[in-house]
Length: 320
Image (cartoon, rainbow, N blue to C red):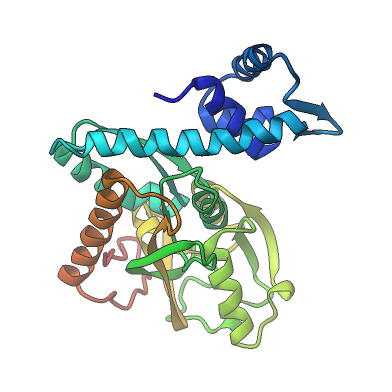
């Protein structure tokens, strides 16, 4: 209900970029530029300075930005309060999720939630856990689903369940016959790693460091932000990787062997929401629904079983 020009201006000012604002608002860059031009014409003054690769506010822009934050916040709160007079949840829900969660956990969650609340429109953004955490804290996303505990004090982080992290290699690889791996067993072997900022990369680095292997000494052959790409390279015999058991199953583990670490290592599925934001019933309901669903799944299926696969028919099971 708020003026679209104010929404666009607020996004450009917040990100310091027309391109980033367009991505956030799901608009084209020319459309963003047009909205800003209209707003500047209305006030008959320049609101933004464009130069040196970044957009900054003029003195007039500072005033408009301060009022835009208040107006947009009140508009959101008003719409939410009116919507909550009815029993049916409605509206767009922006969700940020890591790749593993997007590939395995999220489809089940959205299926159940959308059947229960058919007028809700999920809008999903997939990135590494660090990126998601930052965007939820910045109020760019309503809810985050990540594989690590949040470090930002502005976020409320609830642990929903855990999943074991496994070393995976191609069948026939020299490491495939192992029953488990200590950190030192993997040192020197080619490693297909996740991209910086990924939760599983951080957990793996902590594991190696805690067990006497400096992460910088690992023989990294590649650093990839795409989980399917990692699994493909491992299948080709180019090295080992460390992935969540759920992801190994979800992306068809035929041709791959999953082996536990020693001591065993686990990732966690955490639900993030901002602490300091007016939280709509939609945001709270989805966050509570996600925590309840995953917690109940883990309780029903029990703790993760020891996973070591050696044969062509081996298929490590998912615990949660």
